[in-house]
Every structure is written in structure tokens, then in C-alpha cells.
Length: 147
Image 1 (cartoon, rainbow, N blue to C red):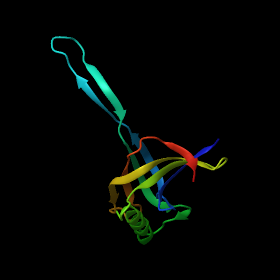
Image 2 (image 1 turned 60 degrees about the vertical axis):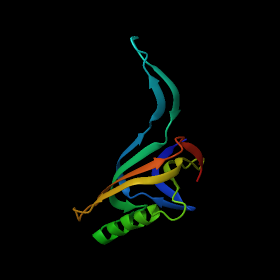
Image 3 (image 1 turned 90 degrees about the vertical axis):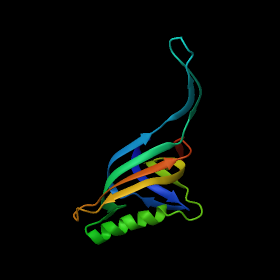
């Protein structure tokens, strides 16, 4: 098994690779619970633990889309516009976020039931645009499967 980092969005049967290189990926998990405190006793009690959905944050540069180098502002802006159109809510705004691909057995690691929370991009440096993308997965399980 050889996992390769290949971040992409799968929406309506189409893969959209994220602009590269990606400089940082963070996955934030949280849990829901009820905490109570008994008066005049040390400590507290926690009940009802369950996982919330997760947030996946990508920070990257817009220098490459798939295998194609983006050398001009027009090409970099077009890559961002394509990504914006993927995130545009149209009826079913849910998609899957793919992180890793195993070429040997043709499986991937991904989250499903995802939506965009925030998409920020900086256009001030004409030689290289940078972006930050926060996605939320309602389902906190990292899936393993074909695709």
C-alpha cells in the first residue's frame, strides 16, 4: 500500500483537483457532551459523548491545477473561478473530499457529506495567488473505497 496525497473534490460524479501546491492541511475534530458539577465535591462528570462533524482546512498556492502549470494571472484566476463554481450551492450542495489515493489497489481515503464553510483567496501577488479553504464534513468517518 502506497498512499499518495491527491486532494480533490468529487461532486456529481466529477473530480476537481485542488490547486497545488498545498502548504498545509488541518483536520479538526470535536465532540459533543454534557458536563455536570456536583456542589461541594471535587471534580465533575461527563456523559453523552458523541463525535461532531469535522472541519478540513487546506492552505495552498495556485501554481498548478492537476498536471497543468498555471503561469499567468488569467490562468490562476480561472482555476479559482472553477473551484468557486463547484462550491456554488445548486440544489444538492453536498460533495466528497478526497485526500489520499492508493494507486496499487485503486482505493482512496475521503470524507463524504461535505460542504464549504469558507473560501478565501489572496490576489495581491500577481506572480502567485494563495488560498485557504475550510470544508465541513457532516460525517466524521474517513472512508476507504474506490474512486
